[in-house]
Length: 126
Image 1: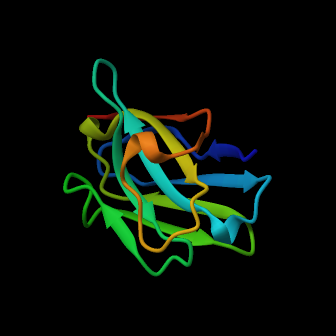
Image 2: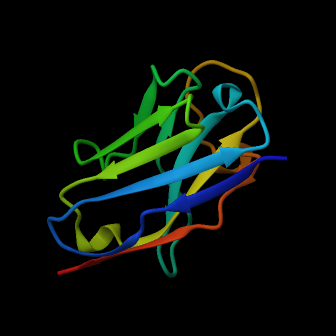
Image 3: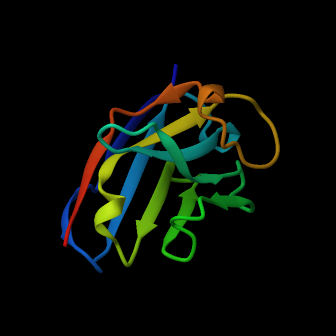
């Protein structure tokens, strides 16, 4: 079992920044591929960023490239999503997810992830 707890969401004005954190427990964190997803009302859940086990490889959706940064601290069992230049269209519930497969690279396939956090709301006002 892996427990994932997100924090850092909130209300911010357009152009502002937030940093999301996801603390993991239950498994060796450095063995987990991690991803950040979001789901807006009426829309499908989408992958916005993903990071490899070591942190050396990352993925970003085109919609957030250049504005969001994913990172991890394996010593703290935590993955982060730094979100800058936020736009109203970034408003969504953000989830972190963990993949138990010990593999290289990043994983962006939603259904392949094994564990999910409870989500944290991010609201960007115009």
